[in-house]
Length: 350
Image 1 (cartoon, helix red, strand yellow):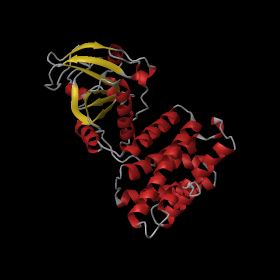
Image 2 (cartoon, rainbow, N blue to C red; image 1 turned 90 degrees about the horizontal axis):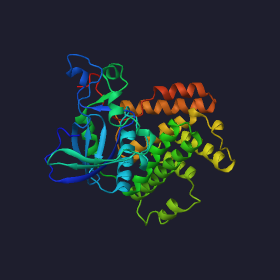
Image 3 (spheres, helix red, strand yellow; image 1 turned 30 degrees about the vertical axis):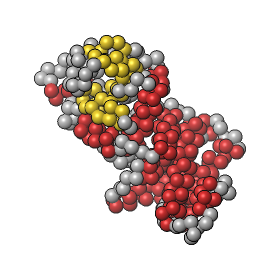
Image 4 (cartoon, rainbow, N blue to C red; image 1 turned 30 degrees about the horizontal axis):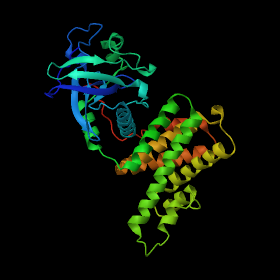
């Protein structure tokens, strides 16, 4: 098997990676390039869409959504993939990604002089069962026409990966936890998803409070800065209320987070641990709010005034529906809220 459009790198190299799951296509929509719509339109599973780097490691992504890191350490690749997919989940509204398990990762040895795969391993995990020929058999022009496979603009996707290449080390774990929370939600494990999401919220709140103190007060003005951040008596509820008073959080968002915290306390301290007792809707609200907070406070993205006003309206409506215990209203609100920041899909796949 051979690669197409691959770089002029020399010699033999080890790469590790996975396919995007669910399937995506990167680049121009292949059905726009075909005069006749034959059943199987994939001529080469290893045509490279683009090459770039992330966190100090070179990578390339094929048109069929195979992402490969130039890294011979499987565990390091596992970390890199979850960081990258976590970032993609936070920033891009319509790419559906999941936590990568180590057993999902494939290994390849590539001879770049011959542009040929010398050896490879099939992933042990079931998440990537549509591997190679099995995968190709399921990719046909109807999948693109019916949007079962979404086509993504490669320049925009490449730009997002390069634009958010670096994050502070203390944010790495939060991004991975956020992706894990979303994966657990997809799998219907609502209690696990809720708790993982809350860990991210609490981390963001603590870091935001710490940064606010450092930015606005020196140690002479506030001698107990460390205590106000680390002391367990300064609970997350106190920090949320303090951020609300100082206009770092809006009134409705702060009160919504306090509702989340109250339910978290019930789960932990009252043994409210059965998934049937944690509603899917409230877990979805947690996951979406966490994604919003991550885009704003981890990646420091600035929303337009129009989007900010729209988000504030969503928080107000969610709070009202929570107070009324109206799951139906909450579900409708969450369904209409597009909390993702960026959109890399082009309808015509160009």
